[in-house]
Amino acid sequence: DIQMTQSPSTLSASVGDRVTITCRASQSISSWLAWYQQKPGKAPKVLIYKASSLESGVPSRFSGSGSGTEFTLTISSLQPDDFATYYCQQYNSYPGTFGQGTKVEIK
Amino acid sequence: EVQLLESGGGLVQPGGSLRLSCAASGFTFSSYALSWVRQAPGKGLEWVSIISASGGTIYYADSVKGRLTISRDNSKNTLYLQMNSLRAEDTAVYYCAKSMLAGTLRACLDNWGQGTLVTVSS
Figure 1 (spheres, rainbow over the protein chains, first blue to last red):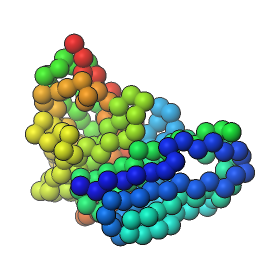
Figure 2 (cartoon, rainbow over the protein chains, first blue to last red):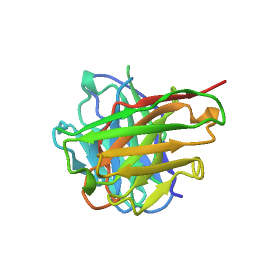
Figure 3 (cartoon, each protein chain N blue to C red):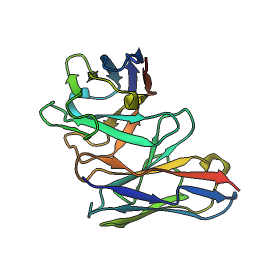
Figure 4 (cartoon, one colour):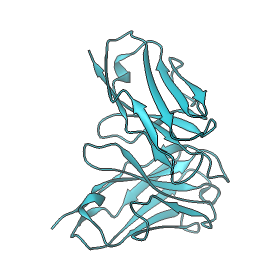
């Protein structure tokens, strides 16, 4: 099974900061990676799919990059609405796996 | 508008059974793979199972294999999760989710239900 490792687990940042979250796969998953945002008490929402494709309606300050085993989610200028937990997920093969999550907190 | 509405959660004793349902609308149900994802209280997301559009291909997480069974009824636009031999560690909010692309398992999850809470406790 493919393991997904996210870092950091927690990130403290201020409004306007550039934020980067990393996700590493235990073996190559090509570009079959998605990023989700989850707020407390809510279902996750997809932000990025196929490593770098922006889901419709998602602000352009979110971007994804990478392929193979190393991936990043970048928020170019953190906004108040972006304080949440972010998860990567590989869907190259099943069982599908999520990273453990990165909580973005207000500094 | 895509809607996914889970039901069937509740309190069950260890070793007990429960069946979750996910009623879907707003898309061609029979064309999309569907998944169950769970989240234990205060923890991260855990992928549970996926079923192909036809129901012919199914995968499970190792942690639930042999105890949880995914199925679908394309005539009723409903996804199910039969949960047997439940353990305390199965306590979680269970979400159903739709694959983004029709006709393939290789797709992310673009629509999610609101979740239903399953609590396994004596």
